[in-house]
Structures are given as C-alpha cells and as structure tokens.
Length: 466
Image (cartoon, rainbow, N blue to C red; front, side):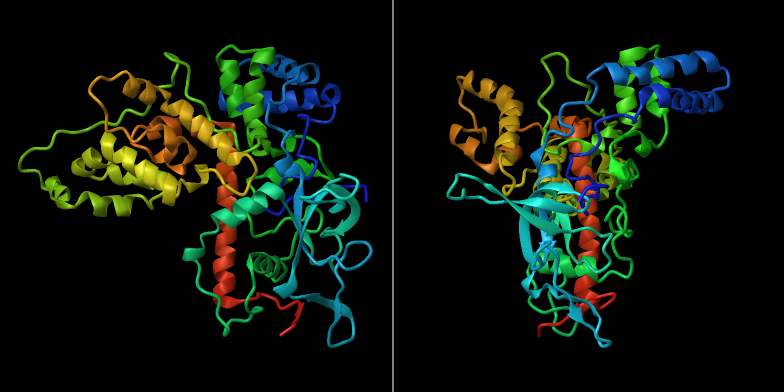
C-alpha cells in the first residue's frame, strides 16, 4: 500500500504525523528559496541590498540541515498518528461491499445506518494495516494486523479516516443544540448516529473528496494541503510569504537565530500538537497585557443610556460574540468601552466565552486521554499566585479557589483565575493556534451538518436499508 500519503479529512495531517523537514534537499533548494526570499524583501524595500539578504537567507536555510530545529510538539503526538476509520470494511482488503444500481453496476454505497468505526494505525496510501483495541488479546497485544481501505483514489470507496484526536474534537465541538432536529421529510437515512451522519455528509457531497489527498473541496484547510506532494514531507510548500523572515533580518538576526522566523513563515505551527496549554510567564518576565483606553463621560452624555442595561443582559449578549466583534463593539461608544473593558466585567465575559461561547475550543476534551489532566495542571499554575495570597491572609477570604476544587472543571472559571492573561498567552502559543485552526474546521463541518439536516443529500449515492 506504499506510494503516497492521504490526509485526515479534518486536520489535513497524514498519519505519519506530518513533515519533518523544511524542504527535501537543503543543498539543492536553499539557493532558489533564498532568491525568492531576497526578491520579495527587495520588492517591499528597494533600499535593501539583494546580495546581503540572499546570503543571510541562504545561511539560515542551510541551518535546517545542521540543527535540530523542528519544535517540540511536531510529529510526536499519537493523536494525529492513530486514526478512526469510518465506513464498512467487509471485504478481505478492508473495503466496503457495494450494491448494484439500476443498471446492475456495483456502484451504490451502503447507507449510514450501520456504519462502522475502526481504531487504526500504520497508515499508508490512504489505508491502514493494523487495528488497535482497548483490551489486550491472549498474547497481551493491543494491535492486530488487519487491512482497512480508506483511499479516495478509489472512486468506489465510501470509507475515509479522521485522526483519533480530530474525531473526538469534532464530536465535542459540533454544537448539537445549534442544529435542526433530524426530520423524516428530509432525504437522508433516518435515525443516524453521529458517525452515520458524518459518513453520509462526506459521501453525499456534489464535490466528492479530492482524489489525490482525500480532503473535501468545500473545506478551507488553511493551506496545509499544499504540503502533500505525493508525500507530506516538507513544510516549505505551505509558505504564504516571508514577512517574519524579513522582520528578523531587519532586526539584524542571522543563522540559527532566524529559525523561529522561518518556522512562522512556513506555517509549521499547523502540525503542532494542540494540547499544550501555556504556562504563566516567569515572574517579572511576563508579556504586557492589552491596555484599554477609557474616556471620561460627562453628566450630559447620551452614552450613559447603556448604563441602564443590566449586567446580566449585556453578559448574555456579549458572551456569544467572537472576540474581535466584542472589542469592535466596545469601540462604538464611551459607555460601552467603559463597561465592556472594565476588568471585572471583561474577566467574567472571557470565562463565559471559554465555558459556553466562541472560546470553548480552549477547554480540554474529556474523551482524549490525558487532555483534562494536562489542562488542569496548567490552570493550577496560573492560580498559584491567588492561592499564595489567600493562604497568607489573616483576614479570611471569599476566594473560589479551594483544595477540593482542583479536581473540578471550574478551575478555569474560578474568581481568581486570570482569564485575560491566560488568553493572551494562548493566542501567542503555536499549540493553541493550531487548536483554534481545528475548531475553525470543525465549525465548517457544523455548517455542512446543518445543511444536511435541512436539505439532506446533495447527491444520493446510497443503497437504502429502510
């Protein structure tokens, strides 16, 4: 089953875990890429010297052949390397048995009513050679050899795969309450479970999975698909410009010091494991938090009308806004600026957004092994200053942080948790950036889900069991 990579239908990462190098051959490719970088920088700033920029860029690119430069967290996570196969696997080669159409051709897929899930590993060419089990067999093994056929290069194959972590993210992040209920009047198989609906959504699209890589054409994968040129080996094809490299060169950086800028420009963060929550900065070394400008309100200001809106109503409205929209709203008038960016109200809104709203992607998923423990461990680190202050007080405290709270999910929502500082660190984290990317793709699937519930199949390719 060798010969090419296919990609997870949600994250766009191959079961290998993704690229391991900036480009295939630094010695052969560094010159041409350095020329591209130098040309782009000179185009933006003609006062720069082309030869100097070329040499600096070339030296930095060659460092990737000499230095262990790939950041920790890339290619070392089983969540991207073990997968969930979705479909039917009845044939000896792990393919689905098809059914005859009106012309007697075996072309109809089984519908989603009895769809199967397989926990698989050792993927290549859109297929897998091993099945994983939660329990050991008589020989103490959790893995057994078994073929699973998922390649999109076979047009008669309805099976596909999702990385194990992405399947759990999709289950957790599709907001069931936001979807229309299943309806017997809509043309899809009735009574489908989550896997069955996903199977029919993927296989009933007018534009089927892309043949070479296995992705859905209707989903925006942020350019990660460009990294798969037969194999997903190199980061370089996903580059969307050289602004970070240009900035580093302008700062006077050279050689190995430019590698972090290369990593940003070649979007290596899209392959980072998405479960590394940021720790608080070292004492005295923290990054500055946003400074919100407040304006004086005169007694005759009409803006004070917004002060009559109850905090509960304003909180209910604000918690569902995307963060950029929230801050845009705060800029519409002085009164809203004062209320929406006030420390107490802003802290409350951000915690509601993490619990129920558009920042819910930051919260851990309980179905992914170890994720909750890792997230809560980091939450405790952010709470340590509050705990120390509380323990050192002679006057008592109404703090919501207590020893028995540490086992509870309310850690991130306690009164003492510094939501703004934590979120500021999250948005600076490559791991959380990738987690947010996966959330965005899951929300695109949610749009497909809603359309499926409302309108059913775009194309009926199924043999119906009802």
